[in-house]
Length: 343
Image (cartoon, rainbow, N blue to C red; front, top):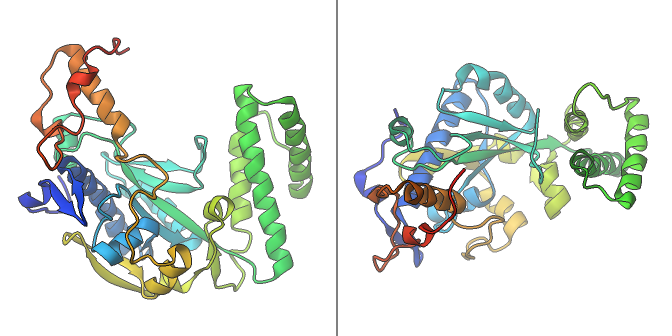
């Protein structure tokens, strides 16, 4: 059964900040909040700290819930709390939730993070729909891991170079595995591999996938400074790809708890304004559709769902249809009636 209780009116179409939110998006939000509620319960039980982060932090502060045109939840935690979470998740994970992880496998383009999901594909079974408020789409929440970084400039530059080399080696390893690597890239791969093996006094083995071994080394490199006294922390993926800097340990340890969607309470940094201004500048000013993925996040699952019903000649249940503010279908299932047969 669901953990959270939502009033019936929550799942109605709604306009916020001039943006139309469909009933299905509300159900997706509710699915993600169910997963967050489970994470929150586990974190409270084992004294694990996390904060709402990135767009979810903006939404919590500016909208007291989701950004109206956003469709995911991001949370963050320090390395020490993250490793606690990894230890207890196998003990606490219910049968209707799953994990996605940096280890043992990541899918290009990789995410140096961890997540909780409700599956890998859409699911229209009664049990699934009961757990996730009538939303058939798979979704999840992402956990971003923040590692301490050295105060000393030379130490930081050494660690940063090591992480970037491992990150590049992993990308090239995937190309080696897929037989898509060019001659120039193969030369680069060999040079980086030799450099890394010498640095770690470690030789990549043929006994298990090399990408997995590189992932382990990458994880080790990210936490090289875990025992240092620095109060500066970074999520290395965000630094490498977005140049993001400026997080402090206090954002994770000095928290306040605020309402989210009038359904649950979530933790945010007490100095949320300082953090948000570092990352986003004038975060108070709404800017639509700045996420790195298409909206809605379930776009292709919806397409597959409609194709599957049409292929079998079934009527699509009303609860799976979405309407705009004028009462017209957001996506007409009839547009998929002539698609080729599903395998």
